[in-house]
Amino acid sequence: MARETWATRMGFILAAVGSAVGLGNIWRFPFITGQEGGGAFLLLYLLFVVLIGFPAILVEFVIGRYTELNPVGAIRELGSGAWNYLGWLFVVTGFVTLSYYSVVAGWFLRYTLIGVTDGYALAGPEEATALYGSVTTGLDSLLFHAVFMALVIGIIAAGVRRGIEVGVKVMVPAIIVVLVGLAAYAFTLDAAGAAYAYYLTPDFGYLAANWTSILPAAAGQAFFTLSLGMGVMITYASYLGEDRNLATDAGIIAALDTLIAVIVGFVVFPFLFAAGIEPGGPGPSAIFVSLTSAFTGIPGGRIIGIVFFAMVGIAALSSAISILEVLVSYLIDEFDVERVPASVAIGVAVFLLGVPVTIDLIFLGLYDNLAGGVLLVLGSLLLALFVGWVIPDVARNELEKGIGSLGGLGTAWIWIVRIPIVIVVLVSLYLGVVGYVDFLTGGFAEWLAAR
Ligand code: PFF
Image (cartoon, rainbow, N blue to C red; front, side, top):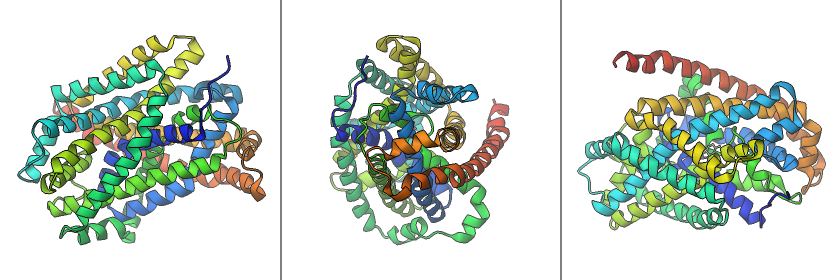
């Protein structure tokens, strides 16, 4: 059967941007930046997007377009032996990532509804934190996790692509407009100056003292936000025509995605500083606490809040879809399962895996540190090794289709993937694993002991 291809180049870019832009930009980026010291983290993160993220997008693009297969099938066609297990890593990563992603996306749905029923008029940061606590644990959290997963399953089961493209086309520009507006309002706060200093001035002393946690955090965030390391971009590029310039497409995706994350920082930190909250303190609640205080203070804040939370929910939907699509296309292509039962079966399994996160937020750390700190980094490392060392000629040829040889840029790319990327990502992975083991034997063990 001939494989469907993207109707337009725009369609492909929109879907890939839809996957990249999501909770990683709006929820994960500001809280990790806060935890990792602000400017020092921002600097490393930006470097990683350009030097590692961009070439790594191309790694996934060439594999997908060359094989026209799902990631598991693609690796099997190109590699042999132990490489075949790489597909399993993607499947595991997809399960873990989507399970808690859906829970957090559910919180955004819940906050949307809170705007409709009650508005965001809160007395102060304590109340904002209390609201966050009530949204994120218990039955509410479970219910909205279920609603979100039902939406993801429905879209994937129906195989609708048109909907995604239109959604992204409207949503991404709208998110940027609202964020810029909020950032402009944040600029008027007295605390803005201190917040900008924190966010934009890299403290090199801090970086030197804390690089073992900042480095893996920046690498993990770069892969997470660009949807790398679990085959999503392989899947999307597998539907792509040969005449496309992969490098331009990768550049557009990385640039838009980074722009959105960076603007979020200009919103979150001024509001945290204005509320007298330590930027590293709130963790995963950072965006919610800062936004609810923003919407409390702004005229028309209630409407803006409802619209914004809903838009983030939709942005999360287009990202979640890309993860479930990897899992489902695997089941369809490899085991000949029909699309609808495959979507429902996997979707329900993902939902169940996410349930512990709705019960206790310690599981959010357990899942998020595993996915962002270890699994996505490992997946990206193995993909870089695979393209750089196992199929370099195929990869370079594939990149040059639609671009031309560009005076040896393809060769340069292969060498960047082969050595510098492999080294930096390997170090990040090592540090990420050490950090995760610390978490398991520290915070998580204490939590278990207290049960
Ligand atoms: N990139 C998405 C975001 O920033 O929200 C999350 C994501 C999607 C991560 C797909 C990984 C992935 F494979």
